[in-house]
Length: 80
Image (tube, rainbow, N blue to C red; front, side):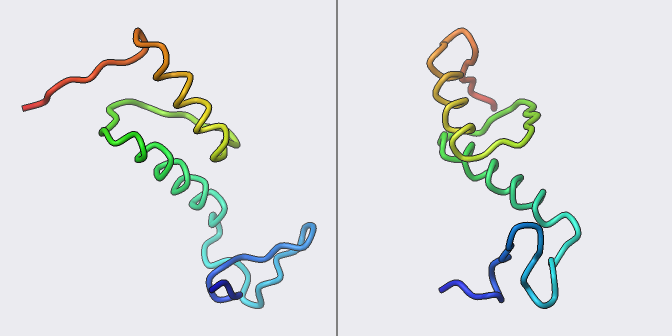
């Protein structure tokens, strides 16, 4: 279950956890892990470069659907 030990609780502009954040860049780390998780759902390794700005699950999902609906945007290769 959720508790102040495993979540960050924010009220307007204040972090309510007594010890604050675990890392100074904790929000950035969370966004990066979210994006890695979203793209891992493709089921294929991605060789490429992603530059995201304030993305979230909905944006990542829409990007993946749009990108992969255009077959000229990507290809699969067997790497030996």
